[in-house]
Length: 257
Ligand SMILES: Nc1ncnc2c1ncn2[C@@H]1O[C@H](COP(=O)(O)OP(=O)(O)O)[C@@H](O)[C@H]1O
Ligand SMILES: [Mg+2]
Image: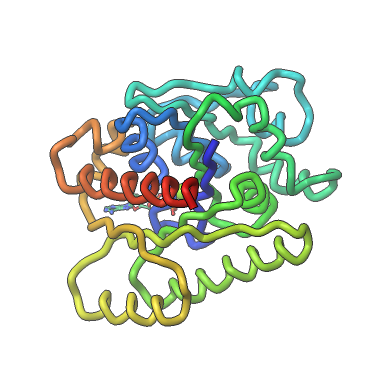
């Protein structure tokens, strides 16, 4: 199973949009794909038109060891071909309660163990914080894909994420690779080009794809579907297919290397 955390503590940069639409593009390629909503705000769950579970059968309860249900009971399938582990409101408390638990950074990794052979790709939609939940995602995935917007504050956000990854290496002895940046809400202005040049010089991470600003993405969200379903022939859907292709090609190279 190839697990990737979609992470950036900056909110509104496109983590959830990219998780949903990249996931759908991977599923279109015939890859068994799981999307995990690790944000207490539940945007991915909402953006796929799913309802949040309650009680014991939640990811929050599993992370805290407060239920004996199997992770498999949490899986919900979406008509676009992906499976989803939805968020639940009690993930807010999980962020706080994890602090006191033994092995707190490894909890999500252990939750995923029974799913090892069930999926080709697992994408984790991280919350807009660098807290316990994001640490769990980075440790479970060991790979991060980072959506950024072409603006000045993006560099600082990226530096903070790199610091977090460094502290995981120092504290836990685990490496986490940033496999690439996805520039979101890109346009053709000079400001955008300059910002991207500055970023490229400061951080040695490849840009895997650029996604333009498209109102279709918001419309798809409101319809509870990926854009590959609502407007399959549009350029937004195509951009996510290109990103999916870039990821799988990269993976192929890693496996052969
Ligand atoms: N390329 C895009 N074009 C138009 N709207 C977008 C695009 N990417 C994201 N959005 C919108 O911007 C808002 C924030 O995106 P979201 O994916 O929720 O970011 P994050 O998960 O990082 O907080 C959402 O309303 C989403 O629909
Ligand atoms: Mg989000």
